[in-house]
Image (cartoon, rainbow, N blue to C red; front, side):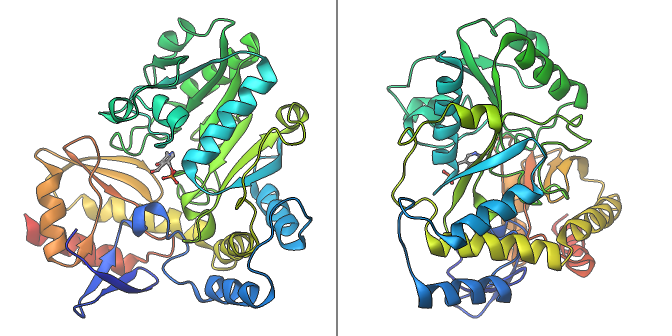
Length: 369
Ligand SMILES: Cc1ncc(COP(=O)(O)O)c(C=O)c1O
């Protein structure tokens, strides 16, 4: 986008030319707590005065607190955290842990799912050209159809270590499935000894109006064996995580997993402050209330033919190319996102977006049309 970002505050990005943009894209779903949340900035600053980094070979109170805090908001069965640096790394480690646990190699993922750009994760990504750019692909990746349990059953034999999915497929155009689909996946995994992995790199940390999609009513209350996180987890400081249940953790031996920077103190201070900011500012409640307002206001725009997704992970479907709407909104100083579905415009705003920001957006959309 032709924007030179210089400064951010809450839902606003200030560009080098003095213009102010309403950020409904959140820097790629990263700015969950908003840009430069003062408590997050303070926590990072305070940590930089104490210790920039030491690897996870030594104990750190900050790391322990980050893990404890994260686990305290996760579904009950997920009791251990492994910290890394990005979403793709979290997914690589999740698939590896599934292979340790089952002694099997194959991984089922879904058409339209995106899991990252390192070798194993890009090979698990059956979306657009990604597997093509990731060639040679890692073997043992099988493709099922999102929302179609029969397509999964047909593949789920005793060679399969894991089924991994974005529970809401963001890049594909914010595609959701029925709660019964997630429940059927859980049952299938339980019956055939397969590990269920939710890639919550986008849906996690409050984006859907709940801490995680895992365990939510929209997901049929299903809790997977592993949840992967990144993006909003550090409010902009790179950090990823795998949350795992006791069974998965019991199969991980010392030095099976590793990463130099994972669990570094600055990232951990950012994680603690991010989770506290979401809680203190009641952002989950805010997401749910403002989502309702947005859905209601969007009824006024007849060109929006459908609204996909939940909370602040929304896909607005138009009859024509969303790219044109994206460009026209940018001219009106509003940043949104496109998707691999040409008709779907994505909104991934900070969780502190307010109703008056929504009104600005809807007025701008009206002007666009
Ligand atoms: C659902 C999902 N998984 C994984 C990734 C990869 O994360 P990262 O870019 O931090 O490696 C992304 C990034 O967009 C994503 O949206």
